[in-house]
Length: 331
Image 1 (spheres, rainbow, N blue to C red):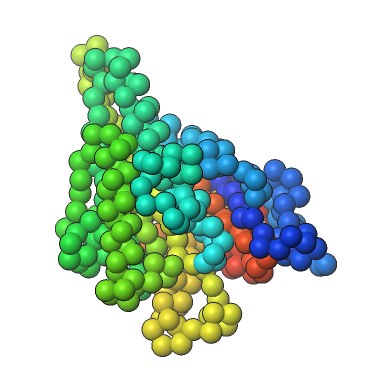
Image 2: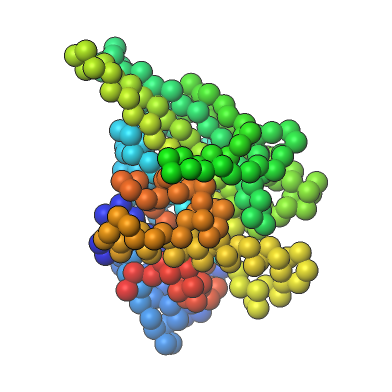
């Protein structure tokens, strides 16, 4: 995105269900460009475009590597997976849907498990290089459904309220776990993800209709001469709700309400990202409070934070309007 050093938007196209290329609506042109509808082509340019042969490791290195480095050094970071239901968001963020244990399938792991592992690898390396380096890692896992936050690590999955001031935005009463390794993080991730699946049946919260946010806080301190240098960073890993339009999804009743709230939060997210990518004055208004999603992520989107958006696309499904509506296009 022009002028946005700390905001990178990439696209990933999942494998097609059709063997005939002419039936595909979305086609990858090269490593930065893709085209919608070859019959009436419109091209879009991204910071990177991944085709269907890309590996999970390649996606992680190009999308998340610099963000993990930043978190270890005190920079907040956020990674979003955006797209329609069935476009591959969860595959990108977690891995294949049949994986029940991230520890047993390292080659298929998605971005979140890889981030857990990479974060502790870098922290342990720093600690090994200096006896004066210490760190603490704490995680939370929440779900935003119909503009209400739920605690995925609480047995009651209670609703959570937001408290904010000029310095910090907090979820009151959210469950926090102190972790000592990437394995610890992945196990907590699995617990929260299982709770999200359970809520589909027990509470009628279909996971594709909610945003899942895995939040990792990193605190480090290092003694340099006689001065203790302390740094804090937050890493947000976000699997966004499916971005279907009401007219296509034929939603009514509760599903219509879900769609309205999803479209609201995605639209606001698009406006926030676009504003941040073009803002030149510190007093420029950024509409964080227009949605609870952007409100809770406020401190990890602006300033010197690093943000990545992965637009996941199904080559056989029309998605041009969705990309335009979210204002994530780069042309």
